[in-house]
Length: 329
Length: 218
Image 1 (cartoon, rainbow over the protein chains, first blue to last red):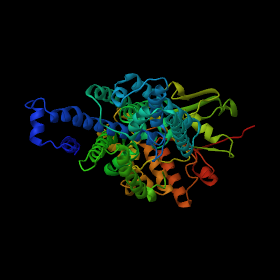
Image 2 (image 1 turned 180 degrees about the vertical axis):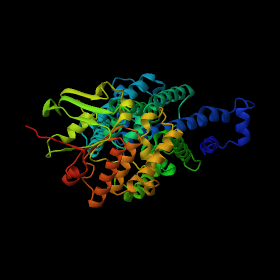
Image 3 (image 1 turned 45 degrees about the vertical axis):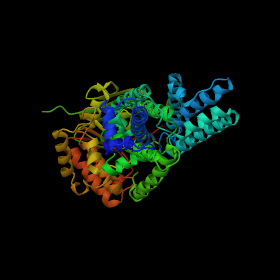
Protein backbone atom coordinates (compact mmCIF):
# COMPACT_ATOMS: atom_id res chain seq x y z
CA UNK A 1 0.00 0.00 0.00
CA UNK A 2 2.90 2.30 0.81
CA UNK A 3 4.29 1.65 -2.66
CA UNK A 4 0.92 2.31 -4.33
CA UNK A 5 0.59 5.60 -2.47
CA UNK A 6 4.17 6.52 -3.29
CA UNK A 7 3.51 5.96 -6.99
CA UNK A 8 0.14 7.78 -6.81
CA UNK A 9 1.86 10.67 -5.06
CA UNK A 10 4.28 10.96 -7.97
CA UNK A 11 1.41 10.77 -10.47
CA UNK A 12 -0.90 13.30 -8.84
CA UNK A 13 -0.22 17.00 -8.92
CA UNK A 14 -1.24 20.33 -10.34
CA UNK A 15 0.61 19.57 -13.56
CA UNK A 16 -0.57 16.34 -15.12
CA UNK A 17 2.20 13.94 -16.14
CA UNK A 18 1.25 10.61 -17.74
CA UNK A 19 2.54 7.21 -16.56
CA UNK A 20 4.30 6.70 -19.90
CA UNK A 21 6.04 10.04 -19.56
CA UNK A 22 7.11 9.22 -15.99
CA UNK A 23 8.57 5.88 -17.12
CA UNK A 24 10.38 7.67 -19.96
CA UNK A 25 11.83 10.24 -17.57
CA UNK A 26 12.94 7.59 -15.08
CA UNK A 27 14.36 5.49 -17.92
CA UNK A 28 16.39 8.53 -18.98
CA UNK A 29 14.77 8.74 -22.41
CA UNK A 30 13.26 12.17 -22.02
CA UNK A 31 15.62 15.10 -21.57
CA UNK A 32 15.31 18.78 -20.62
CA UNK A 33 11.58 18.88 -20.12
CA UNK A 34 9.79 20.87 -17.47
CA UNK A 35 7.99 17.66 -16.55
CA UNK A 36 11.31 15.98 -15.84
CA UNK A 37 12.21 18.81 -13.49
CA UNK A 38 8.84 18.63 -11.69
CA UNK A 39 9.12 14.88 -11.31
CA UNK A 40 12.74 14.55 -10.24
CA UNK A 41 13.19 17.76 -8.28
CA UNK A 42 9.75 18.14 -6.73
CA UNK A 43 7.38 15.17 -6.67
CA UNK A 44 9.85 12.35 -5.90
CA UNK A 45 11.73 14.21 -3.13
CA UNK A 46 8.42 15.41 -1.64
CA UNK A 47 7.08 11.84 -1.58
CA UNK A 48 10.29 10.51 0.01
CA UNK A 49 10.15 13.32 2.56
CA UNK A 50 6.52 12.53 3.45
CA UNK A 51 7.38 8.86 3.79
CA UNK A 52 10.36 9.50 6.07
CA UNK A 53 8.60 12.17 8.14
CA UNK A 54 5.50 10.05 8.70
CA UNK A 55 7.54 7.03 9.71
CA UNK A 56 9.78 9.01 12.05
CA UNK A 57 6.98 10.92 13.78
CA UNK A 58 4.96 7.76 14.34
CA UNK A 59 7.88 5.90 15.90
CA UNK A 60 8.60 8.96 18.08
CA UNK A 61 4.95 8.96 19.19
CA UNK A 62 5.04 5.23 19.93
CA UNK A 63 8.06 5.63 22.22
CA UNK A 64 6.60 8.67 23.97
CA UNK A 65 3.26 7.01 24.69
CA UNK A 66 5.01 4.07 26.32
CA UNK A 67 7.59 6.18 28.14
CA UNK A 68 5.01 8.58 29.56
CA UNK A 69 2.48 5.77 30.06
CA UNK A 70 -0.11 7.93 28.38
CA UNK A 71 -2.22 7.34 25.28
CA UNK A 72 -2.37 11.03 24.43
CA UNK A 73 1.38 11.61 24.57
CA UNK A 74 3.17 12.57 21.39
CA UNK A 75 6.06 14.74 20.32
CA UNK A 76 3.66 17.58 19.41
CA UNK A 77 1.58 17.48 22.60
CA UNK A 78 4.52 17.13 25.00
CA UNK A 79 6.30 20.16 23.61
CA UNK A 80 9.22 18.32 21.95
CA UNK A 81 8.28 19.87 18.62
CA UNK A 82 8.10 23.26 20.35
CA UNK A 83 11.80 23.02 21.14
CA UNK A 84 12.55 22.80 17.44
CA UNK A 85 10.00 25.49 16.57
CA UNK A 86 11.54 27.93 19.03
CA UNK A 87 15.00 27.49 17.56
CA UNK A 88 13.70 27.80 14.00
CA UNK A 89 11.65 30.90 14.94
CA UNK A 90 14.72 32.43 16.51
CA UNK A 91 16.78 31.67 13.43
CA UNK A 92 14.27 33.12 10.97
CA UNK A 93 12.75 36.01 12.85
CA UNK A 94 15.46 36.69 15.42
CA UNK A 95 18.06 36.78 12.67
CA UNK A 96 16.01 39.30 10.71
CA UNK A 97 16.45 41.75 13.58
CA UNK A 98 20.16 41.62 12.79
CA UNK A 99 19.52 42.18 9.10
CA UNK A 100 19.97 38.53 8.03
CA UNK A 101 17.19 36.90 6.06
CA UNK A 102 16.50 33.34 4.94
CA UNK A 103 14.30 32.08 2.15
CA UNK A 104 12.75 28.65 2.69
CA UNK A 105 15.39 27.00 0.54
CA UNK A 106 18.37 28.66 2.18
CA UNK A 107 16.73 27.90 5.48
CA UNK A 108 16.72 24.17 4.80
CA UNK A 109 20.25 24.35 3.43
CA UNK A 110 21.45 25.65 6.71
CA UNK A 111 22.83 22.64 8.51
CA UNK A 112 23.56 24.78 11.56
CA UNK A 113 19.82 25.41 11.80
CA UNK A 114 19.01 21.70 11.58
CA UNK A 115 21.59 20.92 14.23
CA UNK A 116 20.34 23.75 16.48
CA UNK A 117 16.78 22.57 16.00
CA UNK A 118 17.77 19.04 17.07
CA UNK A 119 19.43 20.49 20.16
CA UNK A 120 16.20 22.43 20.81
CA UNK A 121 14.04 19.31 20.69
CA UNK A 122 16.57 17.37 22.77
CA UNK A 123 16.65 20.13 25.37
CA UNK A 124 12.85 20.18 25.67
CA UNK A 125 12.75 16.37 25.77
CA UNK A 126 15.20 16.41 28.66
CA UNK A 127 13.08 18.99 30.53
CA UNK A 128 9.99 16.80 30.09
CA UNK A 129 11.95 13.69 31.08
CA UNK A 130 13.29 15.43 34.18
CA UNK A 131 9.74 16.41 35.18
CA UNK A 132 8.48 12.88 34.50
CA UNK A 133 11.13 11.49 36.88
CA UNK A 134 10.43 14.09 39.60
CA UNK A 135 6.65 14.23 39.20
CA UNK A 136 5.14 10.77 39.11
CA UNK A 137 1.70 11.83 37.87
CA UNK A 138 1.45 11.39 34.11
CA UNK A 139 -1.36 13.94 33.93
CA UNK A 140 0.88 16.57 35.57
CA UNK A 141 3.70 15.81 33.13
CA UNK A 142 1.28 16.18 30.25
CA UNK A 143 0.07 19.53 31.56
CA UNK A 144 3.69 20.66 32.01
CA UNK A 145 4.29 19.68 28.37
CA UNK A 146 1.26 21.69 27.27
CA UNK A 147 2.40 24.66 29.37
CA UNK A 148 5.86 24.49 27.80
CA UNK A 149 4.23 24.52 24.36
CA UNK A 150 2.07 27.50 25.34
CA UNK A 151 5.09 29.35 26.73
CA UNK A 152 7.01 28.72 23.53
CA UNK A 153 4.01 29.82 21.43
CA UNK A 154 3.90 33.07 23.39
CA UNK A 155 7.61 33.71 22.78
CA UNK A 156 7.16 32.88 19.09
CA UNK A 157 4.14 35.22 18.85
CA UNK A 158 6.22 37.96 20.42
CA UNK A 159 8.94 37.37 17.82
CA UNK A 160 6.27 37.36 15.09
CA UNK A 161 4.91 40.71 16.25
CA UNK A 162 8.37 42.23 16.00
CA UNK A 163 9.54 40.48 12.83
CA UNK A 164 9.78 42.09 9.42
CA UNK A 165 7.35 41.10 6.67
CA UNK A 166 9.55 38.72 4.70
CA UNK A 167 10.86 36.76 7.68
CA UNK A 168 7.35 36.56 9.12
CA UNK A 169 6.17 35.11 5.82
CA UNK A 170 9.01 32.57 5.75
CA UNK A 171 8.26 31.47 9.31
CA UNK A 172 4.48 31.28 8.74
CA UNK A 173 5.06 29.14 5.67
CA UNK A 174 7.39 26.86 7.65
CA UNK A 175 4.91 26.57 10.54
CA UNK A 176 2.14 25.36 8.19
CA UNK A 177 4.15 22.21 7.65
CA UNK A 178 5.22 20.99 4.25
CA UNK A 179 7.05 18.02 2.76
CA UNK A 180 7.93 20.02 -0.34
CA UNK A 181 11.01 22.05 -1.19
CA UNK A 182 13.55 19.51 0.01
CA UNK A 183 16.53 18.38 -2.07
CA UNK A 184 18.30 15.02 -2.18
CA UNK A 185 21.21 16.10 0.02
CA UNK A 186 18.79 17.26 2.73
CA UNK A 187 16.81 14.04 2.32
CA UNK A 188 19.95 11.99 2.86
CA UNK A 189 20.76 13.95 6.05
CA UNK A 190 17.19 13.45 7.25
CA UNK A 191 17.26 9.72 6.43
CA UNK A 192 20.63 9.28 8.17
CA UNK A 193 19.45 10.94 11.39
CA UNK A 194 16.21 8.89 11.36
CA UNK A 195 18.18 5.67 10.77
CA UNK A 196 20.60 6.57 13.58
CA UNK A 197 17.72 7.26 15.99
CA UNK A 198 15.96 3.99 15.15
CA UNK A 199 19.13 1.89 15.40
CA UNK A 200 19.88 3.57 18.73
CA UNK A 201 16.45 2.61 20.05
CA UNK A 202 16.51 -1.05 18.92
CA UNK A 203 18.29 -2.17 22.09
CA UNK A 204 15.44 -0.71 24.17
CA UNK A 205 12.44 -2.41 22.50
CA UNK A 206 12.37 -5.27 25.01
CA UNK A 207 12.55 -2.78 27.86
CA UNK A 208 9.71 -0.70 26.38
CA UNK A 209 7.51 -3.82 26.28
CA UNK A 210 8.16 -4.44 29.96
CA UNK A 211 7.70 -0.75 30.79
CA UNK A 212 4.02 -1.15 29.84
CA UNK A 213 3.80 -3.16 33.08
CA UNK A 214 5.33 -0.26 35.03
CA UNK A 215 8.77 0.93 36.09
CA UNK A 216 9.17 -1.55 38.95
CA UNK A 217 8.07 -4.43 36.72
CA UNK A 218 10.66 -3.56 34.06
CA UNK A 219 13.33 -3.11 36.73
CA UNK A 220 12.53 -6.44 38.39
CA UNK A 221 12.93 -8.13 35.01
CA UNK A 222 16.47 -6.87 34.70
CA UNK A 223 15.92 -3.65 32.71
CA UNK A 224 18.05 -0.59 33.44
CA UNK A 225 15.15 1.86 33.54
CA UNK A 226 17.30 5.01 33.62
CA UNK A 227 19.13 3.90 30.48
CA UNK A 228 15.82 2.96 28.86
CA UNK A 229 14.40 6.43 29.47
CA UNK A 230 17.49 8.32 28.33
CA UNK A 231 18.05 6.34 25.12
CA UNK A 232 14.36 6.36 24.19
CA UNK A 233 14.03 10.09 24.76
CA UNK A 234 17.19 10.87 22.75
CA UNK A 235 15.85 8.71 19.93
CA UNK A 236 12.46 10.47 20.12
CA UNK A 237 14.08 13.91 20.14
CA UNK A 238 16.21 13.07 17.08
CA UNK A 239 13.19 11.71 15.18
CA UNK A 240 10.83 14.57 16.03
CA UNK A 241 13.56 17.22 15.83
CA UNK A 242 14.84 16.35 12.37
CA UNK A 243 11.32 16.13 10.92
CA UNK A 244 10.29 19.44 12.50
CA UNK A 245 13.34 21.29 11.25
CA UNK A 246 12.85 20.12 7.65
CA UNK A 247 9.05 19.94 7.42
CA UNK A 248 7.77 22.29 10.11
CA UNK A 249 5.60 21.20 13.05
CA UNK A 250 3.40 18.30 11.86
CA UNK A 251 0.64 17.54 14.35
CA UNK A 252 -1.35 14.40 15.17
CA UNK A 253 0.68 11.87 13.14
CA UNK A 254 2.85 10.94 16.15
CA UNK A 255 -0.23 10.76 18.35
CA UNK A 256 -2.65 8.90 16.09
CA UNK A 257 -0.52 6.36 14.22
CA UNK A 258 0.68 4.32 17.26
CA UNK A 259 -3.01 3.83 18.21
CA UNK A 260 -3.79 2.74 14.69
CA UNK A 261 -0.87 0.28 14.85
CA UNK A 262 -2.00 -1.25 18.16
CA UNK A 263 -5.56 -1.39 16.91
CA UNK A 264 -4.70 -3.12 13.64
CA UNK A 265 -2.10 -5.53 15.02
CA UNK A 266 -3.97 -6.24 18.29
CA UNK A 267 -0.72 -5.99 20.23
CA UNK A 268 1.37 -3.51 22.22
CA UNK A 269 4.62 -5.32 21.41
CA UNK A 270 7.17 -2.70 20.27
CA UNK A 271 9.14 -5.22 18.24
CA UNK A 272 6.09 -5.62 15.99
CA UNK A 273 4.87 -2.03 16.33
CA UNK A 274 8.14 -0.31 15.36
CA UNK A 275 8.07 -1.39 11.68
CA UNK A 276 4.27 -1.28 11.53
CA UNK A 277 4.06 2.28 12.89
CA UNK A 278 6.82 3.40 10.53
CA UNK A 279 4.94 2.02 7.53
CA UNK A 280 1.53 3.29 8.72
CA UNK A 281 3.00 6.73 9.45
CA UNK A 282 4.55 6.81 5.98
CA UNK A 283 1.19 5.86 4.45
CA UNK A 284 -0.68 8.53 6.44
CA UNK A 285 1.77 11.29 5.52
CA UNK A 286 1.91 10.26 1.84
CA UNK A 287 -1.88 10.41 1.83
CA UNK A 288 -1.94 13.82 3.54
CA UNK A 289 0.73 15.16 1.21
CA UNK A 290 -1.22 13.87 -1.78
CA UNK A 291 -4.43 15.54 -0.59
CA UNK A 292 -2.45 18.76 -0.06
CA UNK A 293 -1.32 18.76 -3.68
CA UNK A 294 -4.60 17.70 -5.33
CA UNK A 295 -5.08 19.58 -8.60
CA UNK A 296 -8.49 21.08 -7.74
CA UNK A 297 -7.12 23.22 -4.90
CA UNK A 298 -5.87 26.56 -6.15
CA UNK A 299 -2.95 26.61 -3.76
CA UNK A 300 -1.01 23.97 -1.81
CA UNK A 301 -2.98 23.22 1.39
CA UNK A 302 -0.80 23.24 4.54
CA UNK A 303 -0.09 19.63 5.51
CA UNK A 304 -0.66 20.40 9.19
CA UNK A 305 -4.33 21.16 8.49
CA UNK A 306 -4.83 17.81 6.76
CA UNK A 307 -2.96 15.74 9.39
CA UNK A 308 -5.09 17.38 12.10
CA UNK A 309 -8.34 16.84 10.22
CA UNK A 310 -7.55 13.14 9.72
CA UNK A 311 -5.71 12.54 13.00
CA UNK A 312 -8.14 14.05 15.51
CA UNK A 313 -11.17 11.86 14.63
CA UNK A 314 -8.96 8.73 14.47
CA UNK A 315 -7.68 9.37 18.02
CA UNK A 316 -11.19 10.07 19.33
CA UNK A 317 -12.54 6.91 17.68
CA UNK A 318 -9.79 4.66 19.04
CA UNK A 319 -9.90 6.11 22.57
CA UNK A 320 -13.69 5.78 22.55
CA UNK A 321 -13.34 2.12 21.62
CA UNK A 322 -10.81 1.54 24.38
CA UNK A 323 -12.67 3.33 27.14
CA UNK A 324 -14.59 0.34 28.43
CA UNK A 325 -11.68 -2.05 28.38
CA UNK A 326 -9.08 -0.08 30.33
CA UNK A 327 -9.94 -1.18 33.88
CA UNK A 328 -6.38 -2.21 34.69
CA UNK A 329 -4.84 0.47 32.53
CA UNK B 1 20.79 -34.21 47.19
CA UNK B 2 20.34 -30.86 45.42
CA UNK B 3 21.73 -27.83 47.15
CA UNK B 4 18.91 -25.74 48.61
CA UNK B 5 18.64 -22.22 47.23
CA UNK B 6 19.14 -19.73 50.02
CA UNK B 7 18.55 -16.01 50.56
CA UNK B 8 20.23 -14.59 53.67
CA UNK B 9 20.10 -11.19 55.35
CA UNK B 10 23.06 -10.37 57.55
CA UNK B 11 22.87 -7.40 59.93
CA UNK B 12 20.61 -5.74 57.37
CA UNK B 13 19.29 -2.20 57.87
CA UNK B 14 16.50 -1.03 55.62
CA UNK B 15 15.02 2.41 54.95
CA UNK B 16 14.85 5.38 52.63
CA UNK B 17 17.08 8.45 52.28
CA UNK B 18 19.36 7.27 55.11
CA UNK B 19 16.35 7.10 57.45
CA UNK B 20 16.34 3.67 58.96
CA UNK B 21 13.07 1.75 59.32
CA UNK B 22 14.49 -1.44 60.79
CA UNK B 23 18.00 -2.50 61.78
CA UNK B 24 19.88 -5.69 62.40
CA UNK B 25 17.71 -8.04 60.36
CA UNK B 26 19.21 -11.55 60.30
CA UNK B 27 16.58 -13.62 58.53
CA UNK B 28 17.03 -16.33 56.01
CA UNK B 29 14.80 -17.83 53.39
CA UNK B 30 15.20 -21.20 51.75
CA UNK B 31 13.59 -22.92 48.79
CA UNK B 32 10.63 -25.18 49.49
CA UNK B 33 9.10 -23.01 52.20
CA UNK B 34 6.49 -20.29 52.46
CA UNK B 35 7.53 -17.29 54.54
CA UNK B 36 5.24 -14.54 55.75
CA UNK B 37 6.33 -11.12 56.91
CA UNK B 38 3.86 -9.47 59.20
CA UNK B 39 3.84 -6.09 60.84
CA UNK B 40 1.85 -2.91 61.22
CA UNK B 41 1.41 -0.47 58.36
CA UNK B 42 4.51 1.67 58.00
CA UNK B 43 6.70 -0.91 59.74
CA UNK B 44 8.76 -1.23 56.57
CA UNK B 45 7.38 -4.44 55.06
CA UNK B 46 7.30 -3.04 51.51
CA UNK B 47 10.77 -1.50 51.88
CA UNK B 48 12.09 -4.84 53.11
CA UNK B 49 10.55 -6.68 50.17
CA UNK B 50 12.02 -4.20 47.70
CA UNK B 51 15.40 -4.39 49.40
CA UNK B 52 15.65 -8.18 49.15
CA UNK B 53 14.47 -7.93 45.53
CA UNK B 54 17.41 -5.55 44.81
CA UNK B 55 15.02 -2.74 43.86
CA UNK B 56 16.06 -0.54 46.82
CA UNK B 57 19.61 -0.48 48.23
CA UNK B 58 20.09 -1.59 51.85
CA UNK B 59 21.29 1.05 54.32
CA UNK B 60 23.69 -1.37 55.94
CA UNK B 61 24.52 -5.05 56.10
CA UNK B 62 24.53 -7.75 53.46
CA UNK B 63 22.07 -9.78 51.41
CA UNK B 64 23.38 -13.06 50.02
CA UNK B 65 21.66 -15.08 47.32
CA UNK B 66 23.11 -18.57 47.06
CA UNK B 67 26.19 -17.28 48.90
CA UNK B 68 26.77 -14.43 46.43
CA UNK B 69 26.16 -10.80 47.32
CA UNK B 70 22.82 -9.78 45.80
CA UNK B 71 24.08 -6.53 44.25
CA UNK B 72 26.91 -8.30 42.42
CA UNK B 73 24.48 -10.28 40.25
CA UNK B 74 24.10 -9.22 36.64
CA UNK B 75 20.54 -7.86 36.28
CA UNK B 76 19.32 -10.51 33.79
CA UNK B 77 20.65 -13.46 35.80
CA UNK B 78 19.15 -12.01 38.98
CA UNK B 79 15.80 -11.74 37.19
CA UNK B 80 16.06 -15.48 36.44
CA UNK B 81 16.51 -16.29 40.13
CA UNK B 82 14.21 -13.87 41.84
CA UNK B 83 10.76 -12.46 40.96
CA UNK B 84 9.13 -9.52 42.70
CA UNK B 85 5.43 -8.66 42.56
CA UNK B 86 4.50 -5.25 43.93
CA UNK B 87 1.17 -4.71 45.65
CA UNK B 88 -0.36 -3.07 42.60
CA UNK B 89 0.32 -3.05 38.90
CA UNK B 90 -1.25 -1.16 36.05
CA UNK B 91 -0.63 -1.75 32.39
CA UNK B 92 -0.47 1.43 30.36
CA UNK B 93 -1.52 -0.30 27.11
CA UNK B 94 -3.56 -3.42 26.32
CA UNK B 95 -1.79 -6.79 26.40
CA UNK B 96 -3.14 -10.32 26.14
CA UNK B 97 -2.73 -12.74 29.05
CA UNK B 98 -0.37 -14.91 27.01
CA UNK B 99 1.72 -11.90 25.97
CA UNK B 100 1.96 -10.76 29.58
CA UNK B 101 2.99 -14.19 30.89
CA UNK B 102 5.58 -14.37 28.10
CA UNK B 103 7.23 -11.18 29.45
CA UNK B 104 8.33 -13.38 32.36
CA UNK B 105 10.61 -15.20 29.87
CA UNK B 106 12.32 -11.97 28.74
CA UNK B 107 15.41 -12.50 30.93
CA UNK B 108 16.10 -15.62 28.83
CA UNK B 109 15.50 -14.01 25.44
CA UNK B 110 17.79 -12.11 23.05
CA UNK B 111 17.55 -8.35 22.46
CA UNK B 112 14.66 -8.76 20.01
CA UNK B 113 12.74 -10.95 22.49
CA UNK B 114 12.73 -13.93 20.13
CA UNK B 115 10.62 -16.70 21.67
CA UNK B 116 12.14 -20.19 21.62
CA UNK B 117 10.25 -23.50 21.78
CA UNK B 118 11.36 -23.74 25.41
CA UNK B 119 9.80 -20.34 26.17
CA UNK B 120 6.52 -21.37 24.56
CA UNK B 121 6.36 -24.74 26.32
CA UNK B 122 7.23 -23.12 29.67
CA UNK B 123 4.33 -20.69 29.29
CA UNK B 124 1.99 -23.51 28.23
CA UNK B 125 3.01 -25.76 31.13
CA UNK B 126 2.61 -22.96 33.67
CA UNK B 127 -0.83 -22.01 32.36
CA UNK B 128 -1.89 -25.66 32.75
CA UNK B 129 -0.22 -26.14 36.13
CA UNK B 130 -1.90 -23.05 37.58
CA UNK B 131 -5.25 -23.96 35.98
CA UNK B 132 -5.66 -20.60 34.24
CA UNK B 133 -6.17 -21.94 30.70
CA UNK B 134 -9.58 -20.26 30.48
CA UNK B 135 -7.90 -16.85 30.85
CA UNK B 136 -5.13 -17.28 28.31
CA UNK B 137 -6.80 -15.66 25.33
CA UNK B 138 -8.31 -12.77 27.25
CA UNK B 139 -6.93 -9.27 27.45
CA UNK B 140 -5.35 -8.28 30.78
CA UNK B 141 -7.75 -5.32 30.85
CA UNK B 142 -10.72 -7.73 30.87
CA UNK B 143 -9.58 -9.67 33.97
CA UNK B 144 -10.88 -9.30 37.51
CA UNK B 145 -8.38 -8.34 40.23
CA UNK B 146 -8.18 -11.96 41.39
CA UNK B 147 -7.57 -13.28 37.88
CA UNK B 148 -4.92 -10.63 37.25
CA UNK B 149 -3.04 -11.67 40.41
CA UNK B 150 -3.04 -15.30 39.21
CA UNK B 151 -1.68 -14.20 35.83
CA UNK B 152 1.03 -12.12 37.55
CA UNK B 153 2.05 -15.18 39.55
CA UNK B 154 2.16 -17.19 36.31
CA UNK B 155 4.52 -14.57 34.82
CA UNK B 156 6.75 -15.00 37.90
CA UNK B 157 6.65 -18.80 37.65
CA UNK B 158 7.70 -18.89 33.97
CA UNK B 159 10.84 -17.05 35.03
CA UNK B 160 11.86 -20.28 36.77
CA UNK B 161 12.82 -18.07 39.70
CA UNK B 162 13.54 -19.91 42.93
CA UNK B 163 12.37 -16.93 44.96
CA UNK B 164 8.99 -15.25 44.49
CA UNK B 165 8.54 -12.12 46.60
CA UNK B 166 4.97 -10.80 46.89
CA UNK B 167 3.99 -7.56 48.57
CA UNK B 168 0.36 -7.72 49.78
CA UNK B 169 -0.83 -9.91 46.91
CA UNK B 170 -4.33 -10.40 48.32
CA UNK B 171 -5.20 -6.91 49.53
CA UNK B 172 -7.86 -6.25 46.86
CA UNK B 173 -9.30 -9.76 46.74
CA UNK B 174 -12.48 -11.25 48.14
CA UNK B 175 -12.50 -14.35 50.35
CA UNK B 176 -12.81 -16.86 47.51
CA UNK B 177 -9.95 -15.37 45.50
CA UNK B 178 -7.79 -15.03 48.60
CA UNK B 179 -8.23 -18.74 49.32
CA UNK B 180 -7.35 -19.63 45.72
CA UNK B 181 -4.23 -17.44 45.67
CA UNK B 182 -2.89 -18.68 49.03
CA UNK B 183 -3.42 -22.29 47.90
CA UNK B 184 -1.61 -21.53 44.65
CA UNK B 185 1.33 -20.04 46.53
CA UNK B 186 1.42 -22.92 49.03
CA UNK B 187 1.52 -25.41 46.14
CA UNK B 188 4.40 -23.48 44.57
CA UNK B 189 6.37 -23.62 47.84
CA UNK B 190 5.90 -27.40 47.86
CA UNK B 191 7.29 -27.38 44.33
CA UNK B 192 10.63 -26.20 45.77
CA UNK B 193 10.02 -22.47 45.35
CA UNK B 194 10.70 -20.03 48.14
CA UNK B 195 7.61 -17.86 48.58
CA UNK B 196 8.00 -14.68 50.62
CA UNK B 197 4.77 -12.77 51.31
CA UNK B 198 4.09 -9.54 53.13
CA UNK B 199 0.49 -9.77 54.24
CA UNK B 200 -2.20 -8.57 56.61
CA UNK B 201 -4.31 -11.75 56.20
CA UNK B 202 -3.56 -13.03 59.69
CA UNK B 203 -5.62 -16.20 59.43
CA UNK B 204 -3.87 -17.29 56.20
CA UNK B 205 -0.47 -16.20 57.50
CA UNK B 206 -0.89 -18.43 60.57
CA UNK B 207 -2.36 -21.34 58.60
CA UNK B 208 -0.21 -21.42 55.48
CA UNK B 209 3.26 -20.19 56.50
CA UNK B 210 6.19 -22.43 57.29
CA UNK B 211 7.98 -19.51 58.92
CA UNK B 212 6.62 -16.13 60.07
CA UNK B 213 8.88 -13.13 60.58
CA UNK B 214 7.55 -10.12 62.40
CA UNK B 215 8.61 -6.53 61.90
CA UNK B 216 8.73 -4.61 65.14
CA UNK B 217 10.39 -1.26 64.72
CA UNK B 218 11.87 0.19 67.89
